[in-house]
Image 1 (cartoon, rainbow, N blue to C red):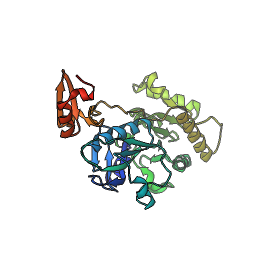
Image 2 (spheres, rainbow, N blue to C red):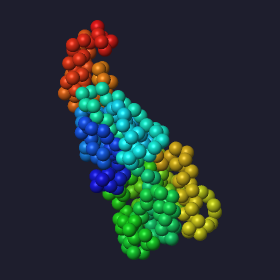
Image 3 (cartoon, rainbow, N blue to C red):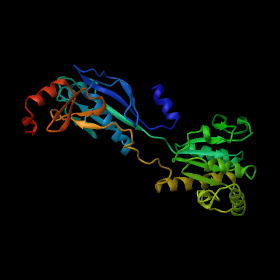
Image 4 (cartoon, one colour):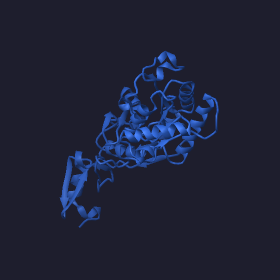
Length: 328
């Protein structure tokens, strides 16, 4: 859990996996937990060599579609009985259950709940104005992450001191495509703040300013080497155009615009269900289990084709009679 908290703070994608039911003999124990990373790395313990490759493959699928998944690995006899004793899932809640046969030497079974954890939208607000604190407060109220940057200011000058960083350097922040950077510095260091924002992968960059001042800032940034492609990333004035409105209403206008953009497909981290280093999988031709090729201990070549197995028993059965499994 400590590792999960650390990853969440770093805005990293992962799956939190937990064994919620088991029937022995099974190496997985009820309550066992693990963190599964996008490259297939597992931190923690869920089960043995047959269960782990399948859990990893299903976890990576969860990262792709963003929905939780419940796995039933092995025969589920006794599951309903255990439920009635309060040791399994609530009665009648089979929605989303994925049953996967475990045709290996173990007769155990278990259920694993996979919860994908994806970074929430994040708003980084730069400046020291009532609008800055209001934007951060509204972002938090709708479940987004928020950070306030006040270069040279004091955290105590803001309504939420725990959110404040007193440096305009964004390099130390986990800024990604799900991050919106809003500059509300009221002319104090607009250019420096925008330059820092443009050096990141932020999915949105906005400047709270009049159209006239925004154009002046853009003109100055051009003299600093930024081209029209760079400046096209800056939305100015930031937020919905509601005319001259109070600071707190500016915050509502900015967040409303960001919510609309997210609903339209922006401020999202692109699906990375198949990163370059995702482990290569094979299917055991005997039992149908997923096998991670890089970790496979049991392997044979038949008619020039590689076959991988989850256990020695599956390999022996295959080598004794490949025709039984559809191969001559």
